[in-house]
Amino acid sequence: MDRNTMTTSQIKQDAPSACIVCLNCLNNGRALGIWITAEQAAAEIDALTVTYAGQGELAFYPNTETPFTRCRKCGGDEWELADYEHSPRSCGNVQAFYVNAEQLNDLYDNDELDLINELASVLDAGGLMTLDELITYHENNYAGKHDSPRDFAQEYAENVGDENAVPEHMRPYIDWDYYAKELLYDYWQTNGHYWRSV
Image 1 (cartoon, one colour):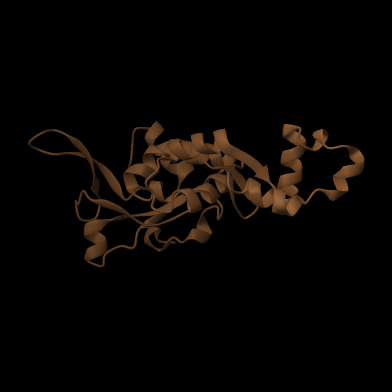
Image 2 (cartoon, helix red, strand yellow):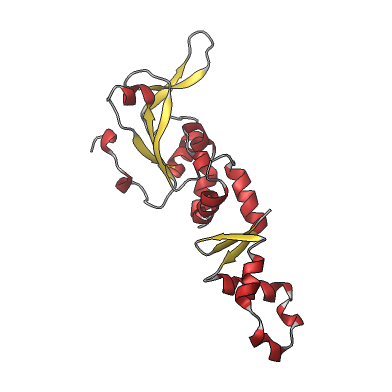
């Protein structure tokens, strides 16, 4: 199969990935780009041969001898992400995707990428936070996954000792729904995942 016809079905569907394309080729209808996983991007960086999935090659600007990746088809030097999957919006350009490729791959390998994407979908809808900032926020404020706000409130009470302050025979009378409503002034949730607001 020709490289220019690669689709997302040829990469891991749940892995962080991006479709990279030479902007000049795209504008002139010569290419649609090639999908690459964060794992492949990290390998390119490690090998010091960033070719954007084989579409480019190392070259040097004649006046400054500054290195750049030149398109093999047209010689262009501008690269864009035509699309990306399973990555926060802040990783939605070529440079950010490559800079964060190893971290994205590590999050994917440790089954934490979906949590970071859930967090980014609410906390960073504009894509202004770096991946490091999202990870730090998650590590410092994640309160777990719960089936309902009521379950979250009950577990929270157990963990901080509030429930033990109430005698056993009085516990059935606690209004857990109201307690959950009060807690959610200090926490927020998406798809059952809870984070402390800061």
